[in-house]
Amino acid sequence: MIYVLDLFGVIVFAITGSLAAGKKHMDLFGVIVVALATALGGGTLRDLVLGVHPVFWIADPTYIYVGSGAALLTFVLARFINRLDKVLQIADAFGLAVFTVIGTQKAMGLGVPPVISVIMGVMTGVAGGMIRDLLTGEIPLILRAEIYATASLCGASAFVGLSPFHSSMHFNIYASVLVILGLRLAAIRWNLSLPVFPLKD
Image 1: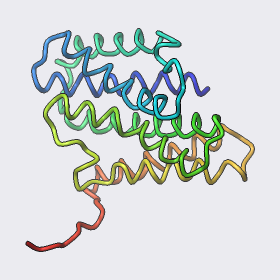
Image 2 (image 1 turned 60 degrees about the horizontal axis):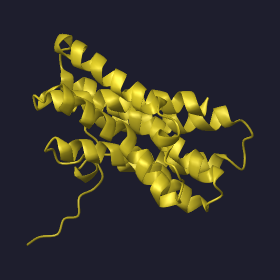
Image 3 (image 1 turned 60 degrees about the vertical axis):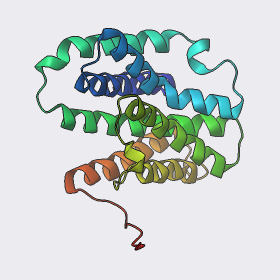
Image 4 (image 1 turned 90 degrees about the horizontal axis):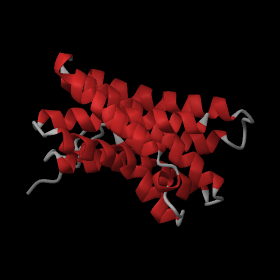
């Protein structure tokens, strides 16, 4: 189940990377580069920090094939999709939720402390989107006045918090994904954000 969810996350984030590259009128090569950087960036950083060698997509090139395939398909079909901004936001929310939980679970499986597992989950969830935004010349979502990394943090914390009390891994995964999706989609729908530090010049 974890492997299938991981591949699903790669597909979703590759789609968001492709759409973001398409908005900047990149060619096919640029689209694939941005898509793969988005889909694999967070997990790569997580594995490097945790000392996992080789990183996941080197150990299993299926991730590259799946991400490239999703990018190619998006390149072909995106011209028929209206309101790309909304599609991008919703797809990104799903990718954020899946990758956060996957990253948290992988860190816990390596026996690191709970707080480190939460940090690794958030890193896995947000780093790919940050790389995507930087490559396409956008302010990263994590730096905007939106509930983004906060949703990831809440979901990762929920996964770690549920683990000692509930024996079903499926339940923990679904519950944590729903926490992130609920917070992120609510933020998109109602423009929710955290309080801003009101420091004057």
